[in-house]
Length: 435
Ligand code: PSV
Ligand code: MN
Image (cartoon, rainbow, N blue to C red):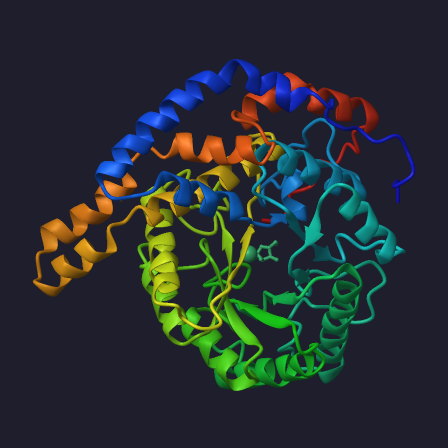
């Protein structure tokens, strides 16, 4: 723990300095866009206000260099513990203003005093979103191994250990002010016949029920499915169908979490989102982007249209006032070739972009085109919103929130990475990463 040692911070005037030469041009662009939108019957101020209110949680593990299963190339000034991670998260929030919370991963973020951690975060303007448990790797000295599974292991002693870990995560989360536990397990099989498919799922439900029973009333259990990896033949909670089945079996506090990278190629993710909204079980997201598998690339970097289409479903459901729809927005990325702070800021901005674009969809026109089966005009209605350059809205929302018009520019000008590289000596680890 290094909460007490010298802490790096951005210079107090870095945002002001960076914004000063950019503000006049932004104002001009904002007014031009405002007039354009007015012609479409859209009040730019309403969109800007909505963007200002938008927040996505930073994954604590995202501020370090993740790497791939082949190698990890550590960057300078990597955070050494959760306090360093929070310092980096505070920089992200200071510059882009859209990331007020952090999602922890236990035991990666274990510390001795969670009250102190909560205060430390609060002093940097940060709160905590869902806590992620980890039963996909063994910890030093662990009594039983998760090699052949955790919550679904054939040995009840292993299952008990994994359950207890999740209860511990709830205890930690309560101290931090979290209100959700995210459950992702790596359990599965590499070979046909290795695992009894039906019984493994039953064991999952039994173990999850014990965790569910310990959940405070105002908490949610977020079940995260994933098609494959590390299990390559069958994963116990492999898809949204299994996830929904589990959530419905467990009870009203159990919801499904959609990690954008956890589906088969070409799967229609926005449709999964629509179905989970229908079932009232959409609990949250791990945003990232991918081309092939669970690539954990920056949100919107590969397929920004897909991200827009996901937000289109969310905005549409909001308009329909779907009850209990308050999904937790979290990033889940792994950075191998970029500065993690820059990648996370970029992703947060891309989420606000997709959200703002989705807010521009002319829903009455879309409903009409759908009703009369005018496929071309229906899809063009979406495209019109998607192709609108909402950058002035995003930048103005940041400016109004005392953040940076150009977060990456301000960050590079601040020299933060050089400062932390000096304060945080390299650990020299070239181990492979966890993605
Ligand atoms: C698994 O691939 C996952 O998406 C889960 O959310 C984990 O908690 C996270 O990545 C980090 O390994
Ligand atoms: Mn995830």
